[in-house]
Amino acid sequence: MKDRNILTGEDYIESLRRRKLKVFLMGEQVEEPVDHPMIRPSINAMAETYNLAQKEPDVATEISPFTGERVNRFLHIATSSEEVVMQNKMQRRLGQLTGTCFQRCVGMDALNALYSVTYEIDAQHHTYYHARLKDFIQQMQQHNYIIGGAMTDVKGDRSKSPSAQADPDMYLHVSKRSAEGVYIRGAKAHQTGCINSHWLIVMPTLRLQSDEADYAIVGALPVEAEGITYVIGRQSCDTRSLEGEIDAGNAEFSGQEVLIIFQDAFIPNNLIFMNGETEFTALLVERFTAFHRRSYVCKSGVGDVLIGAAATIAEYNGVEKASHIRDKLVEMTHLNETIFATGIASSFQSHATPSGAYLCDELLANVCKQQVTRITYEMARLAQDLAGGLLVTLPSEADYRSAEIGPVLKKYLKGRDDVPTENRMRILRLIENLTLGRNAVGYLTESLHGAGSPQAQRIQIQRQMQLDIKQQLAKKLAGIVEDDS
Ligand code: SF4
Image 1 (cartoon, protein in one colour):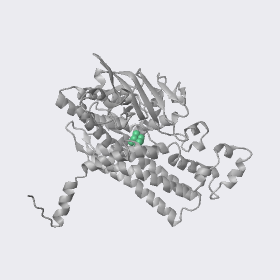
Image 2: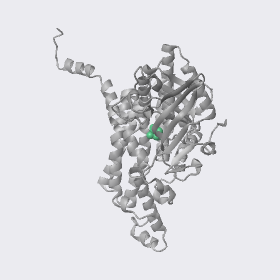
Image 3: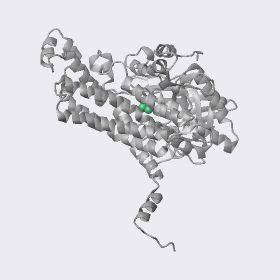
Image 4: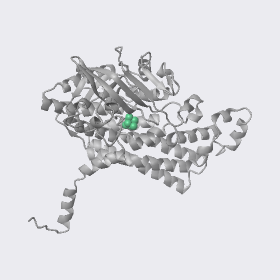
């Protein structure tokens, strides 16, 4: 990889060109992802993480204790509650600016979780993972690279552990060892923005048993490393990016989810941050998911866009003053702020780990993510309610542009007289994009399953709900004295 310090979104987009990636999309190998019209919107969304750092440095940058320089917040290790909170503020802002998943948080959350976990592994095993990780972070900060965090294995038979699978490749594992490093094999599913990243960090996806040491591998490798193949996931209505602008709904920005296949890809020793310490895998998964579950305040930024779109279509239809319309917008705002409130509360309640890095409150992080699994769907329902049926019956941009039928559509698709028909079409397409189309992947289904499906949060909430303490409180007030004998 060429040495470069990437400053702007444009620098970043240039940095992705001419890489020799093996990328498949719809049965074809993609020569240059940067110029592919279906991929480019996801690159544009990631580029906003650079542009925001330029435009609002207080929000999207921080001084690195490692380099003494101002670095992108996505590469910073938070060492105070305030810095953890700022991650959330940055995420909401980026959700507002892109209306989609801007993909860079997985790397930030992986670095912050690994920072404390490697410190604790070293303390117990006298290994050198923490120092290696610090060197790696410093290098990433100097060049302002993007790191994709690869955690979710394809998992095969869910009733079986990694070592009990008929095919050992259902979970990423070490396939070969040498004096210089390890080779890994397996596949990671639903990998957010990985083709748009410069580096990948692979991590185990669940708690491992002591005889599963080959699966307990954490390490970094360049996105263009030999032995990696990428297959891009379909997204609802994604080919609309090939068909013009209005029908795309949000032509500029989208998310990206990819299946990554590792066929004996190599990780050198200096980039290995866990190698067989199975007893630390649960801790890593818990800390990473805690960070990432409260990162879902990103959806409150996207929710701001959806509320804005719903209010706009009400206005274009001339019904914005109706009390039931206003009430629906109030309800959407209330729901949206609930996501933000729980996420940011988790960050405010951060505490120091032995490494000095701060860790968000795990219970509140899980509550935040659990809210996100429901609230976004209710928000989508309310937005569709306000949009009306035309949301799904609207003729195409091609018909609207047609010399023959276009003028007739312009007349009959008009709402309020002073609002151009095209504006009405555009806002309806944006609501469609967020609630049924390409960015519903990020706003809805990713809200349901990303960072763990709903039941995963409920398990964590159950572990931390401290029922015994709550029962004691109740019994004391009720005047219950139990016989200890
Ligand atoms: Fe970031 Fe949200 Fe996308 Fe996760 S879903 S990477 S938190 S924008």
